[in-house]
Length: 159
Ligand code: MG
Image 1 (cartoon, helix red, strand yellow):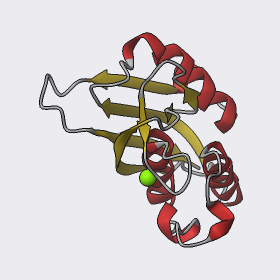
Image 2: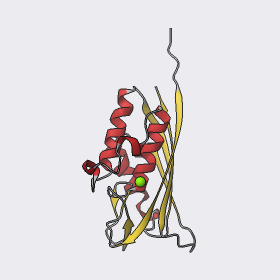
Image 3: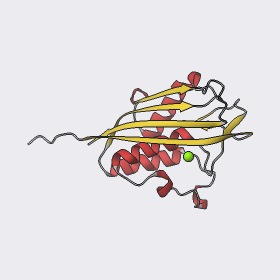
Image 4: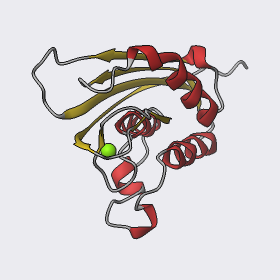
Protein backbone atom coordinates (compact mmCIF):
# COMPACT_ATOMS: atom_id res chain seq x y z
CA UNK A 1 0.00 0.00 0.00
CA UNK A 2 1.28 3.50 -0.88
CA UNK A 3 1.73 5.65 2.20
CA UNK A 4 0.10 9.04 1.99
CA UNK A 5 2.22 12.14 2.61
CA UNK A 6 1.24 14.34 5.52
CA UNK A 7 1.87 18.09 5.34
CA UNK A 8 1.81 20.38 8.34
CA UNK A 9 2.21 24.17 8.61
CA UNK A 10 3.85 26.13 11.40
CA UNK A 11 3.91 29.83 12.27
CA UNK A 12 6.63 31.64 14.19
CA UNK A 13 7.05 35.24 15.27
CA UNK A 14 9.77 37.15 17.05
CA UNK A 15 10.64 40.70 17.91
CA UNK A 16 13.82 42.25 19.30
CA UNK A 17 14.74 45.78 20.26
CA UNK A 18 17.46 47.29 18.06
CA UNK A 19 20.26 48.94 19.99
CA UNK A 20 23.14 51.02 18.72
CA UNK A 21 26.52 49.37 18.78
CA UNK A 22 25.17 45.80 18.80
CA UNK A 23 26.35 43.51 15.98
CA UNK A 24 23.45 43.06 13.59
CA UNK A 25 22.82 39.38 12.84
CA UNK A 26 19.63 38.68 10.89
CA UNK A 27 18.90 35.52 8.97
CA UNK A 28 22.39 34.25 9.71
CA UNK A 29 23.95 37.24 7.94
CA UNK A 30 26.10 39.87 9.64
CA UNK A 31 25.14 43.37 8.47
CA UNK A 32 28.56 44.91 8.97
CA UNK A 33 27.68 48.54 8.31
CA UNK A 34 24.47 48.62 10.31
CA UNK A 35 24.74 51.01 13.29
CA UNK A 36 22.10 49.08 15.29
CA UNK A 37 21.63 45.42 16.10
CA UNK A 38 19.09 43.24 17.89
CA UNK A 39 19.40 43.07 21.66
CA UNK A 40 19.21 39.53 23.04
CA UNK A 41 20.62 36.81 25.24
CA UNK A 42 21.95 35.08 22.13
CA UNK A 43 22.95 37.09 19.04
CA UNK A 44 19.31 38.24 18.87
CA UNK A 45 18.75 36.93 15.34
CA UNK A 46 14.97 37.35 15.26
CA UNK A 47 14.75 35.84 11.75
CA UNK A 48 16.22 32.55 12.90
CA UNK A 49 14.20 32.59 16.13
CA UNK A 50 10.91 33.04 14.24
CA UNK A 51 11.92 30.42 11.69
CA UNK A 52 12.83 27.87 14.40
CA UNK A 53 9.49 28.41 16.15
CA UNK A 54 7.64 27.93 12.85
CA UNK A 55 9.48 24.66 12.20
CA UNK A 56 9.05 23.40 15.77
CA UNK A 57 5.38 24.40 15.72
CA UNK A 58 4.76 22.56 12.46
CA UNK A 59 6.28 19.40 13.92
CA UNK A 60 4.32 19.79 17.17
CA UNK A 61 7.52 20.11 19.21
CA UNK A 62 8.41 22.41 22.13
CA UNK A 63 9.07 26.04 21.26
CA UNK A 64 12.47 27.72 21.03
CA UNK A 65 12.26 29.34 24.46
CA UNK A 66 11.62 25.96 26.08
CA UNK A 67 14.37 24.15 24.20
CA UNK A 68 16.97 26.92 24.51
CA UNK A 69 15.95 28.97 27.59
CA UNK A 70 17.50 32.44 27.83
CA UNK A 71 18.09 31.77 31.54
CA UNK A 72 20.61 29.06 30.62
CA UNK A 73 24.17 30.49 30.48
CA UNK A 74 24.96 27.80 27.92
CA UNK A 75 23.14 29.86 25.28
CA UNK A 76 24.53 33.28 26.21
CA UNK A 77 25.98 35.02 23.17
CA UNK A 78 25.79 31.95 20.92
CA UNK A 79 25.13 32.26 17.19
CA UNK A 80 21.49 31.49 16.43
CA UNK A 81 22.64 29.28 13.53
CA UNK A 82 23.19 26.71 16.25
CA UNK A 83 19.49 26.87 17.26
CA UNK A 84 18.48 26.38 13.64
CA UNK A 85 20.80 23.39 13.21
CA UNK A 86 19.43 21.81 16.41
CA UNK A 87 15.88 22.49 15.25
CA UNK A 88 16.54 20.79 11.92
CA UNK A 89 18.03 17.75 13.63
CA UNK A 90 14.89 17.47 15.80
CA UNK A 91 12.83 17.66 12.61
CA UNK A 92 14.97 14.91 11.04
CA UNK A 93 14.38 12.71 14.06
CA UNK A 94 10.63 13.03 13.47
CA UNK A 95 11.20 12.09 9.80
CA UNK A 96 9.87 15.41 8.55
CA UNK A 97 11.44 17.46 5.77
CA UNK A 98 11.01 21.13 4.93
CA UNK A 99 8.89 21.91 1.85
CA UNK A 100 9.23 25.69 1.98
CA UNK A 101 9.51 28.68 4.30
CA UNK A 102 8.28 32.22 3.84
CA UNK A 103 9.62 34.99 6.06
CA UNK A 104 8.65 38.65 6.53
CA UNK A 105 11.12 40.96 8.26
CA UNK A 106 9.91 44.39 9.39
CA UNK A 107 12.54 46.95 10.40
CA UNK A 108 13.79 50.37 9.32
CA UNK A 109 17.45 49.42 9.71
CA UNK A 110 19.07 47.50 8.15
CA UNK A 111 17.44 47.43 4.72
CA UNK A 112 16.75 43.76 4.05
CA UNK A 113 16.08 43.95 0.31
CA UNK A 114 19.69 44.02 -0.95
CA UNK A 115 20.55 41.08 1.34
CA UNK A 116 17.62 38.78 0.49
CA UNK A 117 19.71 36.37 -1.57
CA UNK A 118 22.48 36.31 1.01
CA UNK A 119 19.97 35.49 3.77
CA UNK A 120 18.32 32.76 1.67
CA UNK A 121 21.70 31.19 0.96
CA UNK A 122 22.83 31.38 4.56
CA UNK A 123 19.62 29.86 5.95
CA UNK A 124 19.54 27.18 3.25
CA UNK A 125 23.09 26.16 4.05
CA UNK A 126 22.38 25.89 7.77
CA UNK A 127 19.17 23.93 7.11
CA UNK A 128 20.73 21.73 4.40
CA UNK A 129 17.99 22.69 1.90
CA UNK A 130 17.94 24.79 -1.28
CA UNK A 131 17.69 28.60 -1.33
CA UNK A 132 14.64 28.10 -3.58
CA UNK A 133 12.83 26.61 -0.58
CA UNK A 134 13.19 29.84 1.37
CA UNK A 135 11.66 33.21 0.66
CA UNK A 136 12.50 36.41 2.52
CA UNK A 137 10.71 39.75 2.28
CA UNK A 138 11.85 42.96 3.92
CA UNK A 139 9.45 45.74 4.87
CA UNK A 140 10.04 49.06 6.60
CA UNK A 141 7.69 50.70 9.09
CA UNK A 142 7.71 53.78 6.84
CA UNK A 143 8.93 56.05 9.57
CA UNK A 144 6.96 54.66 12.54
CA UNK A 145 10.45 54.16 13.93
CA UNK A 146 9.61 51.32 16.29
CA UNK A 147 13.27 50.72 17.16
CA UNK A 148 12.54 47.03 16.73
CA UNK A 149 12.90 44.21 14.28
CA UNK A 150 9.79 42.10 13.90
CA UNK A 151 9.70 38.80 12.05
CA UNK A 152 6.96 36.41 10.97
CA UNK A 153 7.82 33.03 9.46
CA UNK A 154 5.61 30.32 8.04
CA UNK A 155 6.82 26.85 7.17
CA UNK A 156 5.37 23.78 5.47
CA UNK A 157 6.81 20.39 6.39
CA UNK A 158 5.91 16.90 5.23
CA UNK A 159 6.63 13.25 5.93
MG1 MG B 1 14.25 35.98 19.88
